[in-house]
Length: 485
Image (tube, rainbow, N blue to C red):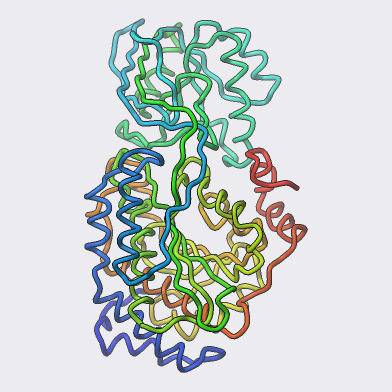
């Protein structure tokens, strides 16, 4: 479907109401128009710029993240929302990036494009050196054999081969392989990057916030190609030095705000996005855009000056990039009231051309959402409903509890061009797509909060397990300790 913006304006906004209402009441229809108008004319781009340019990369637990959390709380309060708090959760380790240096020492000296992997410890002062050992299979028997040759070596993981069939199939084995190489005397490990021009993507080698057992770095794709070619002729020796700031257990805060419901305040929906980002760029698309959408939804709904039927919570999560830690901690801390969570709406796919919502493998949720999508979202190009299932962002922990989960569905082609890179900056966000995505979030939230009945039932552990197994996610979620089959 071609996305036409010729109708943007007050008259165009009313076109949202030209579709059959189905199960959507005229009151909800009218409020949806008000919310959309508020967001199109509101300060969302300024909010996004203040966040991304003002705080930069917001690595979880860093000073920039902590300042951004306080700022976000003050934003919610400025909208007239009284119930705003910082909810702490624990992380195993704190980490802030320092300096990184790597070079080929022999056969031909050459500097390399390199950065620390997240949550890597430092090397000893002066660095480490060793010959390169390539590992392209992390099956336990292969790792055991390779470890016998690892003493004094720098282990290079060929991720293209290891993860050829998807990260969910090999992540647990990959993480399990680090300790045997350390025990065998390896001095460091390196991951090759996947982007041309030696562009580096920020990421880490683990799921969670523990420090890696070995100093860990990434190297540019073209440099990796050179190393492989040199190895065809003989051994390659390298020098590697990483200096990072590390800490023991730390407390990090999610930012939570709530507009109390007027008729069923004990029932609630939650609109979330992760506030943290990697530190190469300023986290504008990942996930400043999602954060600003949540803030805009809160502002626009609060500006209505009328409470929704159910309570609406707004959440800005920490620790997403390290393994959706903040949202998982929230579900565990609130297990006693999780049965009252009617739905979770998540936005963490950037501000691309809108498509609709992913319903995470639930046909019943798709059927329940269709009247809302047809009546309220079609004019925003957001009526699509996808059965795709994922567990790489913050709807996941709620999905494990059987909560109906919606993940904003947008075109992500341009998003992946800057994802986790130094180029993830404010100027990459299309204002029209961004505002439309924010309107979809706010309108959907209001419709679900106002529906006399819950949008869909909670499903039990067995039904969740079937969804995860079909999506081939059950084993990896169990391996990282966030799911018990």
